[in-house]
Image 1 (spheres, helix red, strand yellow):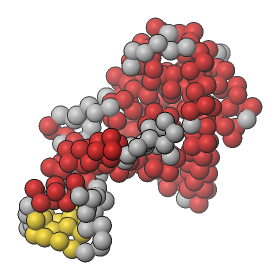
Image 2 (cartoon, one colour; image 1 turned 60 degrees about the horizontal axis):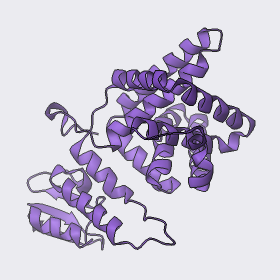
Image 3 (cartoon, helix red, strand yellow; image 1 turned 135 degrees about the horizontal axis):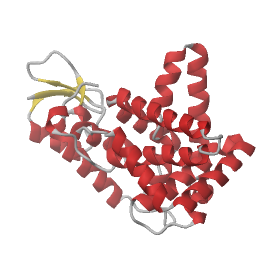
Length: 283
């Protein structure tokens, strides 16, 4: 049995699982609603309980299918429901596998990935304010290749046509807030820099606005923050190794690093389930 705080701010319960599932379907509670399991002193958010993950996933699917598209533009997914579903099922991340798969992808499409990465880096260095737009385009290209699609050089510039404003805002806002966190107190800046890692992929892939994408990335990454930090540290080693090869190797190392992040995104947001031993791990 459960006690839950509804979206109207009122407390309800005791209620069983089926009652709460019905309230989810009726939008009387959501993934951020506070809930207390009978016999426990701790209050949690409803979206963190695995018994309701499928109910939130069904809610998100209903919302996506029922919302009429505006001018042919498909409705955006529910970021809160996505976060609830991922946190409820948990996820695993094999850093070595992400890097090795990225290397394999690079060797298979070497000139396409290296060429696109090089050109986008030149543009981003020339106009730093649009770095987020350039990175979003590179992720778009990598996702097409990872998912077995046919990709062309022009796909690397999809950020300029598909989500320019949101990628621009995502890069600008996350960069400013991370920088501010580092200036005021280094640790908050490091936390935010890691937590917002998947913001640009979420904007270009899920078509989320910049702030819901930032929040979704933060909630999901915070569940295994140290693992994501480990991925970034490994990427740093890869980039430093590339710089050591007469600085030319960095043009290979950078695509490998971005590819590792793209594979990590696929493993987390694409639905890989963590083994039983890691289910229920604390945030």
